[in-house]
Amino acid sequence: MELIRIRGLLGAVGVAGVAALGLPAAAQDQAAKDTYLRYHQAISTVEKCEERQFNQNEYSNMETYIDKQINNQLGAGERLHLIEQGKTNAYELVTKWGCDSDKVNEYLELFERELMPVL
Image (tube, rainbow, N blue to C red; front, side, top):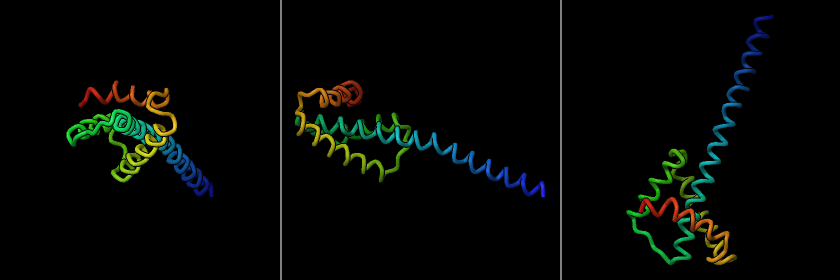
């Protein structure tokens, strides 16, 4: 009888331990998504405000840099979704606030500071 209670207790502790380990991973995953989205909003903002088109080599260099920043934590499907979301967000931001606004300038500065050097 006592052995059954101990096994039950160990099982409950094991499940709680696994759940606790999942929290930091979920937080890391969300941080990676937020970072990835921010960079792609910056790229799209530059494309819109500076009417700039990047070639395949430039995209590849930027993507390599971004992947390092997120430790390659996101799958291809999630990346594609975030790229499209970044384009939409950038369009809405530029349309609503204009390229000279502080909100848009934040993304332009991010691009200049971190992505421009890798081109």
